[in-house]
Amino acid sequence: MAGKVSDYRSSTDFGTRAHTIMKENILHNYSGRLIPERSYLKYFEELEGDERYREGGVRYGLKDSLRLDVLEKVGNGVICVYDLKTGKSGLSPARIREIGQSVHKNFGIVNRILIIPIQPWLGY
Image (cartoon, rainbow, N blue to C red; front, side, top):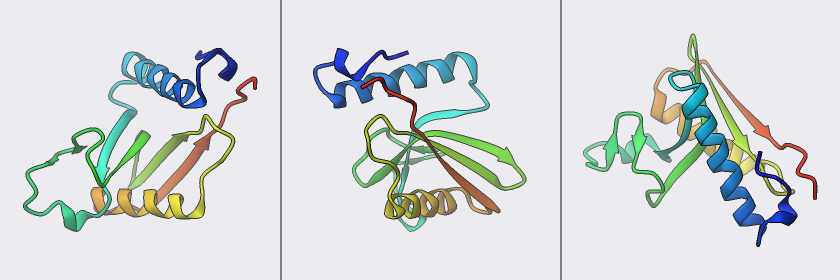
């Protein structure tokens, strides 16, 4: 648990810590089932002939990439994206569209994409 937002110098520091804790938890307890903090190019067309592309994503934080907090390939063409929200705002329609397009373009045949915001009580 990251604690309270008020325990940090800024909400950005809190968000970074919360994402780090989530990533470590996934790597230790859900490795192979969930994929944490992976960057993907926004559009598949950018992948062709691009040496920056690696199977399963691109270099973390690469310019013009989209970082997904947690990805789960459920099966039967279903992919869940869990987006940790540590601030007061949720997912905008534009961001949901961007995530959906990126997942569709990077994973080929996708029957359903579920984008699930995770916004825990933060104890402000």
